[in-house]
Image 1 (spheres, rainbow, N blue to C red):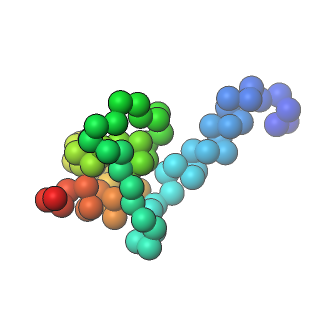
Image 2: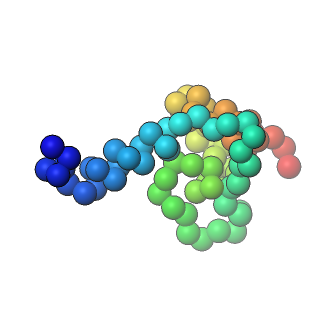
Length: 78
């Protein structure tokens, strides 16, 4: 049955659980530097600046639930 799926659906199905998994407190959280010109398309802290991630956390409760440590760190003052 998997052979009939388009490759992009198979890849998305394999990556989606990893992207939605809650962050562990012991993981190091990295954000893009403020001067970064290119960002990736994943919804992960490493794909956003700290300010951008803080805005996403504030606007999206699902992101706050999935990444509580990163959201807390993004909301902290420098």
